[in-house]
Length: 324
Image (cartoon, rainbow, N blue to C red; front, side, top):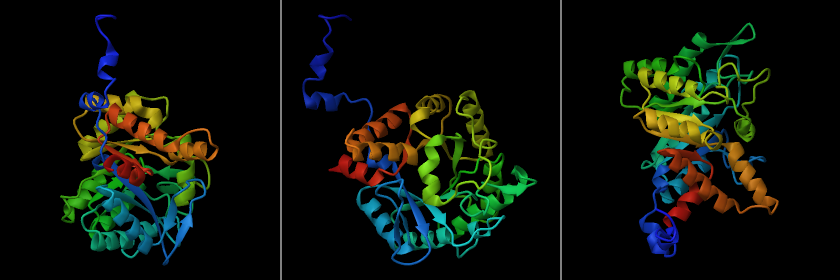
């Protein structure tokens, strides 16, 4: 069809027509809000590199969880900042540690909200890596038991879903087996299956106080140049028992989200990460861009690429915009 026989503007001229033929629908049902839990009471410490976000004591975590629920968001994902760290991340899987207490408080006071937990060791180790260190290297197999213990402690505390983010080989199978053997076969796993070694994580490391004390994470997080590897990683995690596959970050990897949606039949999650959020907020602070408009367009693009779920720091504002 060619002009003048076809005129695309006919269906763009009327806002109701635009609504009627809209191909991608973004909903608050698609959104997950990240929250950062710290010990103490009445603690609300600003995260300098993430305007509008805070490290929160459990009383404030509950308040933010309620806000999320009231905005129509179905789930939060919890990250913890412990009071103490050691080489074996013992506070990651202690029953009375920060995330475990936050889970219990949210499930008690906002029971309608689903609580997802990040399962990793980096915020709990004194070296900041996502696994056990042996001779200066991350020991993959020695890390698996600790990751599984962490996931199990979250399930025992009442988590509705666990999300391993460490990128150790075989951790989904280890977690699945551990959960099943302890009576938690109904707890789903959202695997950070496709997690790239990205420059966009900088503000998060401030928020979670999880920057590595030496080296980097390129030996376990994926090379940004690789796409076929993403399919292999996702396929392996599915075979090990993952229920949802995540791509992280989102914006620089929309092609990966699209490919995975075409090639696998599980739900796809995407993490609209801290650097993506902070760049937009900084642009607005400089008076260069409209962050609200950028955020909504960004989330729509992630959904259009194929993501079923989007973890985003903009979840509450976006949900209110979508539902008003």
